Amino acid sequence: MKGSRKTRMGLEEVVVLCAAISLIASAVVVSALVVRGSARIGVRDWLKPVHEARPEIVDMQTRRPASDALDAPLIAQEEMQGLFSSELRVVAIGSAYPIAFEAEVCPFSGIPQPALNQLDRDGDGITDDWEMKYGLDRHAAADALDDPDGDGFTNLEEFNHSSDPQQAASHPPYAIKLRFVKRIEVPFPLIFQSVNILPGGDSVFQLNSIPDGMTYFRALGEEIKDIELQSFIPRTKSDPARLVVRRGEAEIELPQGEKLVDPESEAELINILDRSFEIATMGALLSLNDDTYTVVGVYQDKVLIRHNDTGNEYEIVGLAEGEH
Image: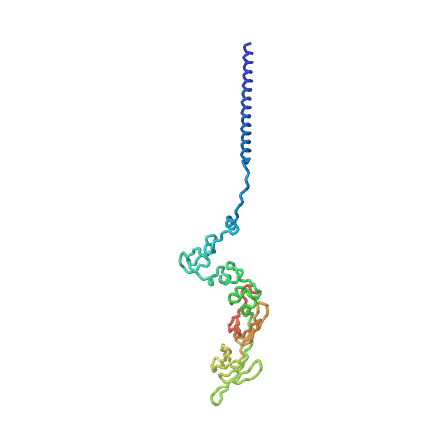
């Protein structure tokens, strides 16, 4: 009996404890709700205006400078722009310092720098100032071979001959487009036949003309078709007599009784602009578009021509590597 009673008393204590805990939890929850409700009431009271008032009218005149400043951002003066943006720099000659592209003197070493008309940064054979003048890229070598005006001459050729690469009417001489192809041997137009001594001791020389079959008698100092008789070399045991004549600037020895291959002969030329061929004969005229030239020298591997208006001479040589 005593054991049963103790057990019953223990259960009652547990029930009472649980009830007490439930009451405490309920009280906490109720308190929290009360506090939250009070806070909401306080916020609503705070949001509710005490009194109403019209908004103040903004005076735009006093704020106009600030508004204009937003529409026109600050632009630094030209002399200060270097503080905000980097400038083109290059390696200085003689010191390797990075200096401004247009600098005439290295500010670090004091070494003078080449002028723009001496600089060729991309190594294309055209100076930087010329490329800048005509809108080319002074840092790209490829544009040296461009032909913006379509006259058949590259920018490099236009630069070398001081012509305008943007105007087809301004172009280098057409002679620079000629190339030597081959030499064509022809006989010299005169054959020295004999020498006759006149009673007074003067000498008269007989020459036959191959082109027309005529026979001429001339003394020293006289001419036959622009060929002047210069001097006479008597025969020796080993060599025949020779008559020295001059044609242009060349002196030619004519052995007596022999046909001589013209040392200048003729040459075949090709115009790489239109792939046409020209025959260059000593003293002949060459017409290339609006240019006219005179052939002043025909040699084994080249031809020399002279511009009839300017007097400039051009040496015509063979095709370069890559030319067709």
